Amino acid sequence: MGQSQPEVAADAPGGSVAVLPVLAFLSLIGGQLPSFSTRANLYTICLGGSMLWLGLAGRPRRPLPARLGPGTAWWLVPVAIFGVFEGSTFLLGSMAEYPTFSKLADPLLEDELLRSAGYFAWLAGFWALVRR
Image (tube, rainbow, N blue to C red; front, side, top):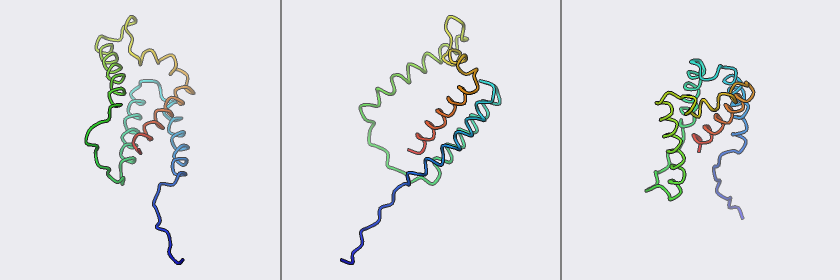
């Protein structure tokens, strides 16, 4: 009768909604920078490092799994293929016959709005992975 139920701590669902306007603002700044320029690279490295630090700060540590699940290989195969192709075409000089994926994305990244949208997708995905 007078017993109260134990409280369970959970993350508030509204916390991630407050992050979206900040990520949108940061992506608008990043979208204004020239594609693959020194300023854009420095902005990306600093922003990514800051997000990594903020995302991992104060988080409770979860125990590592004993081994990776069977679905891990299906994620590693396309990542490895992408890395081999991107690395080999970069080392060969990214010629017109064998362009890197970055060179193929250049026409899309010329428009500032599309570049900002891509930047927002990258920031939101990175933040979701870090906060996971």
